Figure (cartoon, rainbow, N blue to C red):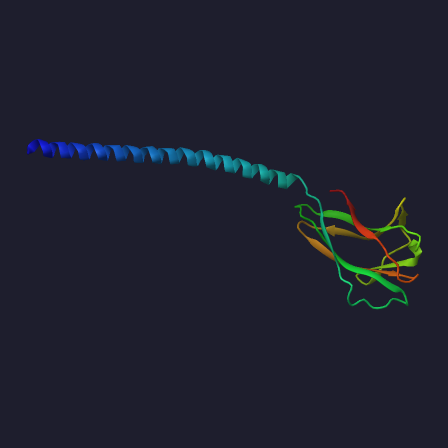
Length: 174
């Protein structure tokens, strides 16, 4: 009977030693893995942060049509109205010009149109006459870091209801 108790204790000690050894291996593996995973993520994060600190991204712009609620303008025909939202997604401030590009066609000349920006007439005297379009500088904007600006733009015609194709261009150094 004495030998079976010794064999039982010996078996229990062997099993405990095996489990303790496995626990030590798992803890060691986790410690080594955690260090390497953490260092890898930190180096990638610092690289991304340095890129966003020095590099700049494009200016973001969105235009939404809003044809409702436009009053008559000196008997001129209302053509289009919308809201242009411009956002600076950079850490540094940006200076830019907002340019309206009007596609040329035989139904109108640039003098036949009036453009209102936030209710005020845009200067149609300074127009760039390109091959297939007119370009009108609507406004110069200075946007600080992460700042945005919104413009209400309405287009009227002196020659009646015509179809006008237009787009916007943001000009600046970014």
